[in-house]
Length: 532
Ligand code: 9PG
Image 1 (tube, helix red, strand yellow):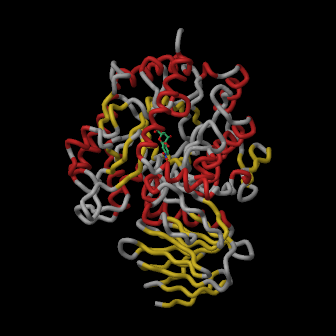
Image 2 (cartoon, protein in one colour; image 1 turned 180 degrees about the vertical axis):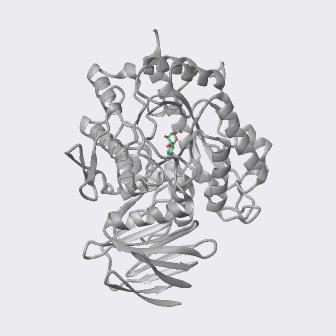
Image 3 (cartoon, protein in one colour; image 1 turned 135 degrees about the vertical axis):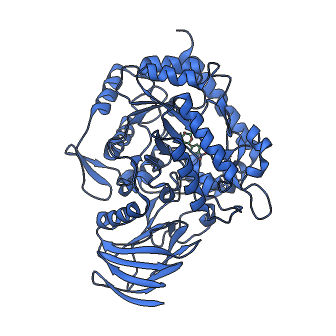
């Protein structure tokens, strides 16, 4: 049905089942809604599906190159829209009008997507009709209104300051073991962290969440050691994934999410193996997830970093026909409840479906000890993989989510040892962490020079006053900070990219890469932790 609307002096022709004026905008209802604007917008706000997905303002005529290879796409974005070349995004789309104001179209519901074609902004839902907010204002007004609307519908995470976290990933990666962690715990003891978080590398397999043989004393003993040192024990898991080599995969093939042909839905490739997703609409899977979370609590961990959560919302055939994001949200709720009062950080997570069920959400790709990895960004057009520039770009476009959960920009670096970033780049990550108010690092104290250690301690203790002065600029305790250099996408290298893209799509290449990476990490850890 057509509705003729006036919004802040702009005449919009809207198609929707219903339309009603609300404070500061309009509420539409429908499975599909379209807004015909009286002029061509200048820029489109593209909101990525999950934590790592590219989120940025783009030119309305700008075509973002498709990322390669297809095998890795499910880890980067919603695979259903990965081939949609229009400016498009998940749940929310906004346009910048010629006069600088922002017009935002966003669903108060799940399973939705927004795209721009010429002057027409459209939104649709994969499930039934939903409510849509249309609002015009400054950038912060428009996004704040959307954040409060989602908060009213879905709730929010716990209030108060986020904990300060020491996380094992960005120094030791999967080369952790209890001997090394005990030494790191010794070094971190007395430093002002609330949480010591054990990341990827403790588990037998992705899917088999038991200690591997590098943790002969078991997870309960590790948690006790962390608690004795004065920290809240934190643990990483990817509970919605299973790799083919896992016992879970072998013993419960019926738990895997499958496509219309009965094949497991591809969920990416990592750890040298294809990733498969669990069918989170199955009651047995939900019961297993709850008992896994209770087990982690019983071990003594009360901070859970639940990762690769997008797997639970991939398109597939769910037995009860439940829409994919609703199924994911229900699984997250089950895990949330089983975790009791533990702190829940969602990572690799579909953003809006996680609201109200997590305390923190990673809002960008991983940082890394390098500003940019040209292989990924320029050859593969992949802006969702580890690298400081990718992390800053997406995070700075997601700060409006702050009222809904603790906004996690990932860790910061102070070290020079085993870090390829210049001090200005490390400084930018620290400033972003200050803007987010989330403080975490993986720097091993023994790797730090005295000045670096002093800077880390000062950073952990600091509570700077942050004022936003522009889209990408801030005053942090009065000092101007500008993130705009991280925003432009690096120029693609198409020809070489085609070759590297082909190679990166071969499983044997990915397996080889994984093996080489593991070997060099093991060597590094051996060098750094031999002797004493
Ligand atoms: C552990 C890590 C850390 C990290 C998480 C997640 O291939 N990929 O695209 C890819 C992206 C992110 C990623 C790993 C692989 O990192 O964000 O903090 O916990 O898993 O494996």
